[in-house]
Length: 379
Image (cartoon, rainbow, N blue to C red; front, top):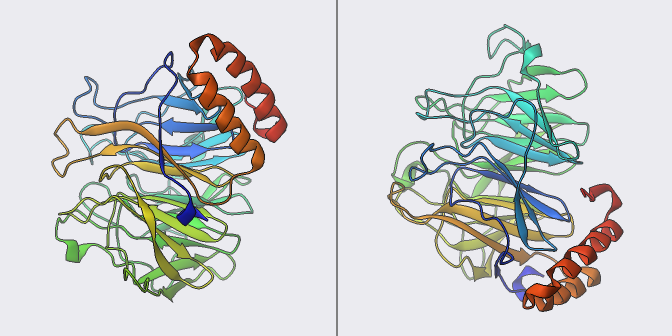
């Protein structure tokens, strides 16, 4: 379906707050909102954005959320998962990178706007001692949440060393476990992981080298089975017209209806603007006709439960110290949008042209979101 839809640039409401351009942030979404956590920019006085933003999809407005509790200090290249109104954050780096690393696990209740630090119950055992351990501090890992409410954190870096450690955290027992499986993926960071009901898949990644040959190919991918606790390798099949996507890290990645979508990223020499899909039933790669408006990496992508992918921020040049970071929002429907979504897009498009109707728009937005998904209404 995505091949027949248009990638759009979303312009926020004229009276909206706007987050500063950034990279190394993470995004999550529900049907009504996009959440942006953290990020970094060398052109920002404090370098790090210890912030949590919410973008309302219906009213096209940004809000800098005022939270209570222990907000994470290390907010660059953290791991983020959004689960039923709770934003789960693990790891990340502060400034300087590789010196101020975190192994803390935080949860933010988006209803209460309150942070909780779960690291107080960590064990003193070494990182790879098995059950009830303390995970290694670092950044650039990937994290997924299984159906039985267990977090899996894979890979990452300390800034000096790259690893292929796999940790599991039980949200019921509040304990970490180091999982040592046979033939895990090679050490890497800024890869992405997605999961279905049976396993999680590791997509791309690399290390510190700028040699594309040292990034990981996408001709094969590896997955970890939640049930057997074993790693498996899957041979992928190329697009007939375009072959395989180029190897990359710092890309955007989402999963929807058993299909993985990747966008952007870079291979040490080139930045990408392409969008690819991988069917996890057939492991067939296809290149989508849409492209991002510009090449970008260190951005973040998320997909709503209804199947709309959003992309925010990132770096637009290889020299990441240039003033080239973005705060743009792009969207692409990966499936046929529900009728209520299409109708609402038409209504808001018309209302946004008339600033005197913005309050009407907000009132309608409340009822629309409430009707679509009562559990996700955060007003």
